[in-house]
Image 1 (cartoon, rainbow, N blue to C red):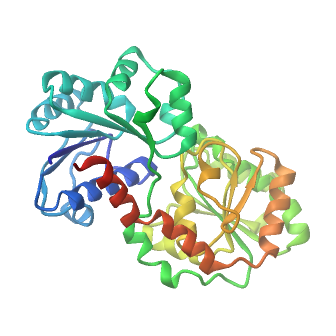
Image 2: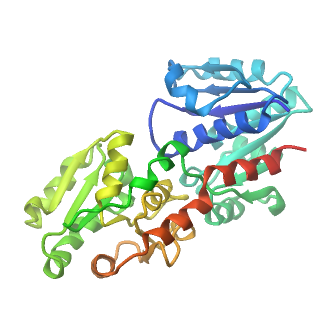
Length: 357
């Protein structure tokens, strides 16, 4: 069985979709073993370092192409590399019309869409709708995302399957040493700090801090991430006279991020539009509970033993929930056990069952 993976990018950025698709690439290489070949095409990547690629591939990776944002080259490469391919895995709905075109030229080719979240919670273009109707399967990261697609396009419901995201084994490997916390209460949040991502709820965490500090003095809110909205968020913290209670740490490496998860008391991201919320899993892989909003796919990721769900944008309730999470003695081992339900082997085996005869 030969597979071709299409991705907007795999290594240019470290946001959720590239991280998810790297694990799809790894799983495809693992499940083909010696019985097939895997190829991939990344639209936005310019050059792919073999050191970055090695952890996510194997001997069955036969060929790849990095198109450096050249859409014409991308289409040409798809049509070329789809030769002698049984399954095309499309990592973003914007690339689905190209997959549909390839299937028209190669009638035996079947294509599958990976639907992540916000990119499919919208009306579709004519070409996207046509391509969605021709998809062999649509793999949705959450039931919420599955429902959002079905609201907008009349499709056979049996072709839309929920395949949750998985933990990166490279991050999971550090989990055993992760449950260490500090004596000072630390609320950790990780997000792009861009104006386009204000729905992430970082404002609401900052606005909740005065009430939190009244009950739990000395608590820190540690904000990891960078973007064009960072200055506004820093000003918001100053307006609330929070001083050193809110720390903006900027960008951190994967190794540093594991350390941040290890030293925090709990993780919070009360976001409105998470298709799944891979970062919650990463926190739980460190044995840490999570706070999320009751929107999008996040409530499907967090269980009663691994965190709390709050109304989106309700600052007083967010503050109360944070205070409750600081006071509660969480069972780190139960959280780790829950996180293992989303382990890479489970994800790989689920994908193999869907793709292999």
